Amino acid sequence: MHNTRFIVDSMLGDVAKWLRILGYFALYRADYDDEEILRTAKQKNLWILTRDKQLVAKAKKMGLKATLLPQATSIVETLAFMSKNLGLKLEIDFEKTRCPKCNGILEKRFSVGVGHAVPENIKKNFPVVLVCKSCGAVYWPGSHYRMMLKILREASMLRRESEGVDYGVEFSQ
Ligand SMILES: [Zn+2]
Picture 1 (cartoon, rainbow, N blue to C red):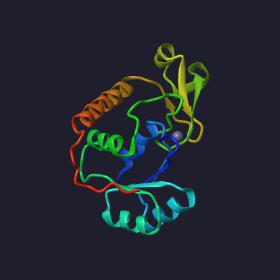
Picture 2: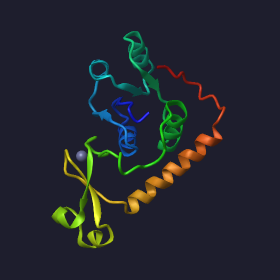
Picture 3: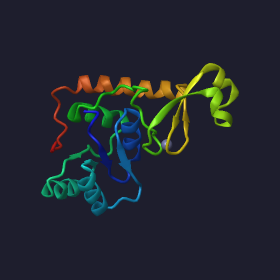
Picture 4: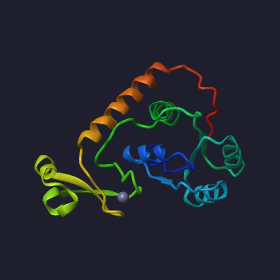
């Protein structure tokens, strides 16, 4: 499943961010239109995620893989849905995690070598950090990370509770 690469419809930036955190390649821009999504999905063999029924219909016609996400749900519900319907693993693996900002590859670096990007107290607590090879953003497992784990736990619980529940949306591939 980690080999599946996604393209995420505009307005779903939080979905793209989470896919990247969970280690999935996920293209996203806030200004995508349908044609660009379809064209890019075809060229790069990407799985389309959207809340737009018409886009799923167009994708199917072209023989592309697309999944309709439930309307206006929280990120916890969306993650539970993707876990159930796409087999998304709700675990953060630092070996696979990608940059939530830009989809770039992250590499481990000693925080002392990262310079001003990391505050001194963080360097003391986290000798190793993750640095994005594309945009240079630096990540360490601080309070934000604990919040993400909480969201993933809630999503896993919801997924288990929802076993057998019909979301009323069609899953297509
Ligand atoms: Zn980046």
